[in-house]
Length: 623
Image (cartoon, rainbow, N blue to C red; front, side):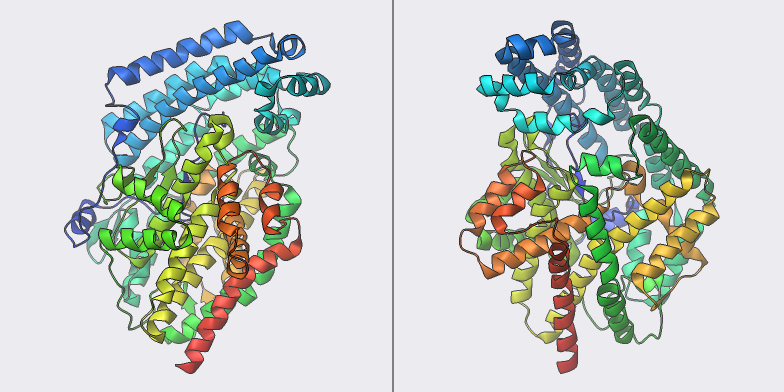
């Protein structure tokens, strides 16, 4: 159910687990005292009485709720709207307890995914909550069978019910795609042995992969990190080894992909979705034509952004052509700065404070109150994310901090999510969550504030050039690459409707979108054919990826408004974040004079990227 497991929002392209040697090296450098989160704010321990009691109470309360309200909602709407409002409040409280349980279990597991005790704890919690929540399924299904006129009259008559209008309106959008109650119950219960099981197989397979580069055996993260190594031979060796290992496991990854795509096709067909991405658009509460306009604008920008930029990069690297292992190569003769934890904290909080002291104060809580887990550890989950948990507690941020400039930007990004989640918590569990498309707003905005603050302090044109190039590459990875991923997913899910897809064909489709998005400057050898298989978003959240491009372009437009009319912007921005999931994107953007339905909106956001490339070209010409 959408409300039980609050959105964990993360970075666009996380990698895998660190090896013990890499983790030890990270802990022995001069990054300072890296914080670890304190999960006691959720529960004292895995075996605590509080956790056991809440698990038992969640089950009992769900069963009692079903006994009290099943079959009664239409009558309550007609005769006792106040009781219907009380039922929603009780449902919200049960969902919050279940969300608290699963947030804790998930964060415990995240901290050490290779620990069998913690893996079992997480898996058992998933199974028990899935079973305990089954009695709640009736509520939203039956609620959507209440007559529209009756429900409208009930909300007009009872303010307590009208308070939930945004959630009710949101819920009604699902009505055309609901199935009969017993079928919904079957879909719900079989998720544990179906999609969730395949997700877990993918995660555990990725965690088990080992890559041998120059005689050293590595897990995924350090292997992929070598693609950013200054030595081209090192990048090439890593790239070919990654491709070889992924190819060796292609049968498993191809089976996972085919099975999950078929699973989705069955679900979509039963529910009546006509397009492969329609269920994601519905979940994001965004019109398909808005997504189509975004995708079209980004596709049209490929030559002006990625093709153009990588042509410049090839010249800097002294190459006539780029191989795929050159995509994230550092600029030559550049020593990358290392930021200890204290410096990273100060940089981000200063940037936030320059926009709003309140924003910096909220972000400061994460540092001061144990809401961040930053160290690299063996077995720790890859990448970075911000998890809101539930409104009665607070969010948590997970990083794998290594002191690189990109790590500082990741810290700014995830704290932006955290600030958003804190501000939206006042809406309550049912209305605090934003769709994925809007969930990236505060994170990308926080990242932009930090980038602009750092750029203003560049000591010389060479340093400014490096910072601009790094930011452009990050934006290409967030916008161009994610839309390429979306186009790849569309190809995969469309093709799967006609039968199983071979590993070879998956590789062909992957290269088709890579050629189109990255441009003629790149060549791709055989090792790149299987790189589609490591992207976790394809497995865990089909069509999630366009949300990154949506958020980046939206923030670029927002930031343009801020630069041109700063007066009153901060309050309007905070009002947008506090709204949580209570408003449609059109209502949230209206105070800023922005409209995502306008094709020019996306061009405006993309123009910020081309503007940065213009500035970079000018620096190059003058240097």
